[in-house]
Image (cartoon, rainbow, N blue to C red; front, side):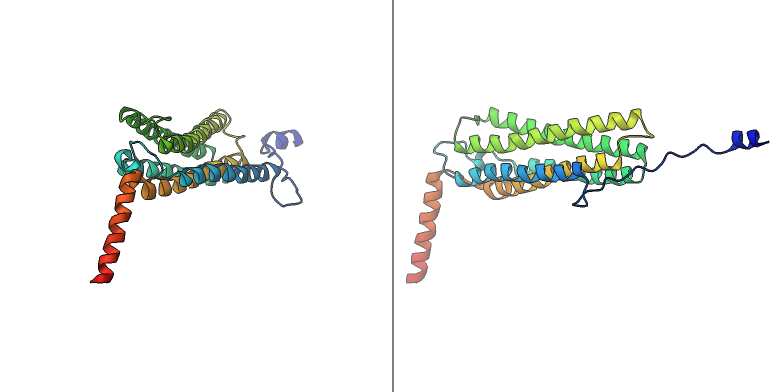
Length: 232
């Protein structure tokens, strides 16, 4: 009788995962990711500062106003922001143990990330056709360095998400854990935030910069208008 009861008893559930106790209250891996992102802020900050310091000092063209296409880059920015939303949903699904939804949302994040990289490749090729290469002028050197490193970060993030997706698809009942997806989400949101800063400074503000001669003419015209305004 006892044997029959044992045979029909529900299978034993695995013990809950033991949470890592740390002095900071944050998981060591997650804390390490925050430290890495902090150092990456300094890295991108130096690249952005370099671009702003040399902004408008190119002696030869093409200049930003001749080549920057704000509408196309706005679309690519929207695509990257939507990938961040998909990543939020993947993290939520991982925390709730919904591995199937984790795979779906990670796949959508990967597709949107690849779409952003596709826009960047198209943009770089269009610049090349227009005669703007890395060594052309100060604008091209600082622009390609900054956006190129950001594109490399996005590519690394896509590779990371592909690995998580494969793991989740092959082992739905196990990894990746909520923490694994959460850490990847921190990295992905970081590259999205960095792009918002880049898009604002390089495209919305600096995308209409012209050459030094035009800047000087514009400044002289403004000065003359100010003087004539005082006289009148």
